[in-house]
Image 1 (cartoon, rainbow, N blue to C red):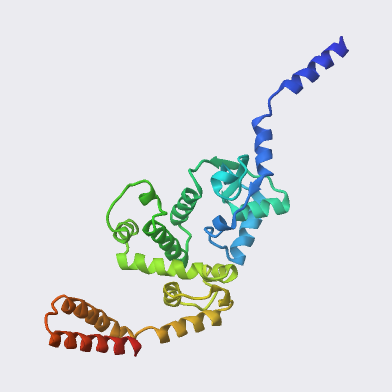
Image 2 (cartoon, rainbow, N blue to C red; image 1 turned 30 degrees about the vertical axis):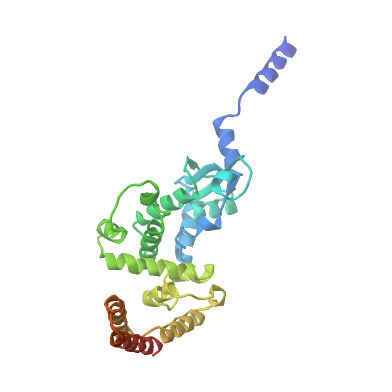
Length: 287
């Protein structure tokens, strides 16, 4: 009787489907971190990270980590069509929990592709209340640049029309010029090595927002930007090459004048006059 009972129990256990708990534990061991997504997580200061660590060790990890359930093919990182689980929020909590063996919860989300994940992460960060001014400017700039180049959600979904800077300016209660400056700032930040980028967004290094905006407008060899001095020197060289700000309006005006006058040429004297205008413009550009 006992033998038959144990045999029946063994068969029942073999036939049972894996529980939700078992599946969750399996996913936790398969979490993948992409550097291209990790960059959207604002760096914590040493003090902030230590405080988070102390809170988790004392009270546990209360907030679930957000994970994208996808495949390598769909994420654009490989050829396999098997499920993978990419971390999209909770990188600091994940690091602490795995280091100290603290259990954590996960929340699974589904996205169309990697661009949709990036849009979600940018919007999520912009919804946080504890961002510093540099981080706010960076994420607004990222969103502006992505939508302007067609990678953002509005363009992809064929949604809102009109000027992107004006739309985002109204949403964030700033001017369109501020949004465009944010775009240059984000471009500049993206040119920095990871360590300097983290320090800049944490407010730890002596680089002004204006310097990073100018860096964003420049063509530079990013491999040469290894220190604050490298960045300042690159910006200074770029300013030396650029026309003086006071000349920029005059250059723009002369260009328009040359184009307009060229449309009206009818005599040899007109041609000579046009050549004179072009010569003046050339000298101004070379000054």
